[in-house]
Length: 261
Image 1 (cartoon, rainbow, N blue to C red):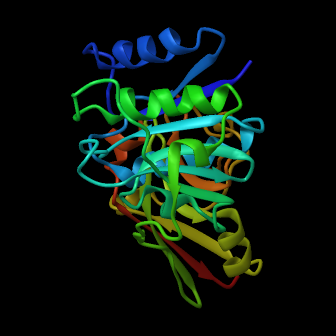
Image 2: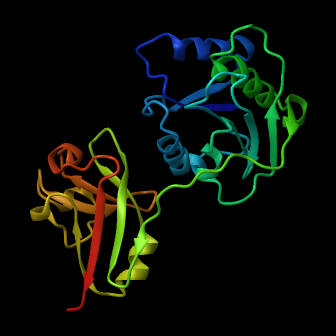
C-alpha cells in the first residue's frame, strides 16, 4: 500500500487537516496517510526540516512526503516535486529542501498540474494532494511538473568547534520537554579525544559531566545528557520537562568544554 506522510503547521483544532485528508482519500482510497508532525511552529521551516531529516531514512522506497510549512499560495512561489534517495518530497521552494539535502536530488520539477479549483491559498490540499496521489498510483514527476536545475537555498547556524569546546544550540524541543541540540555524536567523539567535559547552558549550576545511555540512568527529576536515536545530543530530565525547568528553549546556546585530567 502506498504511503503518504504529512508534516505541516495545520494543527488539529481547525478543519484544514481533515479537508486535506479528505482530498487524498477522495482521489485514492487505497493509501496509508501517516501524520509525522502537524504541529510544527507556524512558518518554522527549520523545524519542519529537522523533523523530516530525523525520520526520512526510516520510511520505505517510494514513500511520498508532503510538506506544508510556509508554503504561501499556489502562485506565490514555485512548488517542488523531488525524487530524493528513492523517496518523494512535495514542498514549497522556500529553502526547505536545502536544509535536509546531503546530495543533489535525482529528479527536481516545479509542479505545474492544473488545479480543479480557483482557490489558491491551500497548496497542500489543492496542489500537493493530487500530485501525491498521482505518484502513489505509479505516475512520474515529469508528467506533473517542469524540470528544474536549482532550488532555493538557506543555511542554518552550525555548531562552532574549537580546540577545547563545542558551541551549539537547541534546535528542537519535543513533547516531553527534551531539548535536542545540533551537536552530533561524531562531533563529540572528534573533539573530546578522551578528555573529561562539562556541558553547560543558561542555568550555570546545572552543568552535566557525563553522557547517559538511557533516561533512567538519572534519578527521577534529575538532569541528564544523552545522544538520541538520530545521533543528536539531548538534554533531558528523567520524568521531567527540561525545556521549562532548565530554560532550554529553541535557540538557547549549549557549550561543551573539554579539559585534561
